[in-house]
Length: 303
Image (tube, rainbow, N blue to C red; front, side):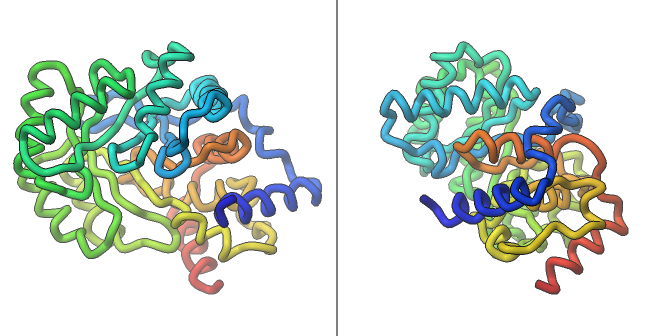
């Protein structure tokens, strides 16, 4: 059991014991969408990451539990699921779930190319499309900017051939943001994927404003800093002033991200259906305004 799962489960159980509204109580509300700038296509603002959480052996019960998760995900109106060849068996497990549930048409499939050289990149992208049962890949991203000149050229060709719908680039470290911004200008990606949270706010200064100015959609990874944010508030009650827009710490953290005007979709990873519902509930209801966002940031900095 990971620290993230343990901390979050404790926090959710504590809330229920105190009579808080259950995490599934808002599930009837529809998740908000935002347009992909380059096309206007509506994208639900909460998606699903698969790093670690879908990297399993593939025993039947592991696939069944993730099938239940994806069925719930689709039922709630979500669609964006993000993976990578770097994530072990995650792409393969996503593909097994899609095959078993016939859910491909309901999903926006994003994955990545993470290798060197054109031939290796093409082979990896073909394999991703095959194992994920994706057909046309909705979003192909150059993972951590690796061999970006070569892969972005290939992805553009695949877009022209109808094998990929959107192109993107990713990173998760603030030390790479200068390179990310240079790539945004040079390669004109239609998506970027970056880390952003109350504990990692470096992208607010330059990357997010540039994405908004250039009309680039933004996916957010590491929204909980691998669970560190839950550790920071363990044993604490949600502030009264936050209960107008959040029903849990998870929603508090996600709504800080989602209330930024440059953010298109956040992709927290989970294999727990209660955590999934809690994450998706962050995509409904009120969002913090600028004043509340400042208060949230100040609150977290005081911990």
